[in-house]
Image (cartoon, rainbow, N blue to C red; front, top):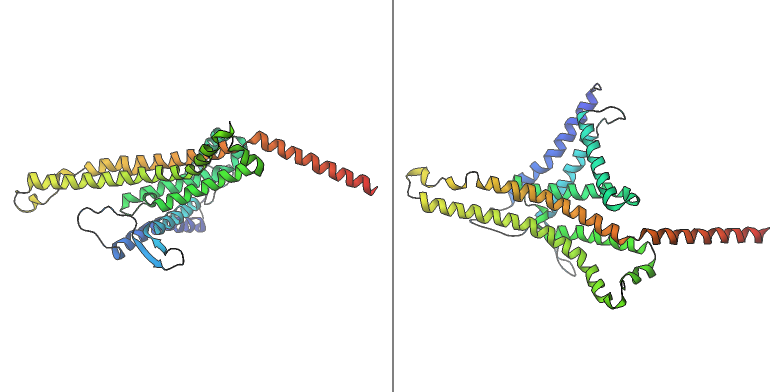
Length: 307
């Protein structure tokens, strides 16, 4: 076990505090500045700031703020896990950090192939951001994954990556891909291409939002059932929500934890599947080899001309 210096301990404390403080700041901000609604309220993210713009108003919402809080927390969590990390020294946090890296790298290699091994940090970032965004509902914050605008932004990023890797084989190869296996299917292939980010966004957003809605409706229903059955009891007994004890917590295990983590994993898997399937590696290598041969022949011709 390595000796922990004072500087090491100070960095540890700072990184841990900066991991927790953004979420605490988000809770304090919500309590102080976001009004509490009466009764059942199922709305989108609260608009914090709005500025008129030529096309549409530029707005900053609760979902955007909470997304940045998650990003800051994840940044300092990573700094904490890698603080003082060295080759051959296996502390508990180093074992955890190495396990995360190896697990994601193995996931990327098994689903995308050796060529995409550098994709592991992106996949880990997608999973971490999605999972921790969904888990914000456990502390009463609005989960950014319940906002279609946030998830659609992630899906568009994946769509740009899909297009980029398709274009690596050349614009002509990209256009030809819409006519496979037969040119008559080109319209359907174009629709399929455009629908990829749409389906990814709505799948992730819909599953997270539906869990929140179901939890709220069940909690409200249990409150009404409690009032109907036990509302005539004297004093505080008639107001205490007996039937709500434990049930929302059990539902939260599924809708907030299991479903949130599952959707993060599914989004990452779809990202890997769409990007890797869009890239024709053999055609790319053949094109690269052909260009390399042309460059060598050109260089050889120039050398012969000079001599």
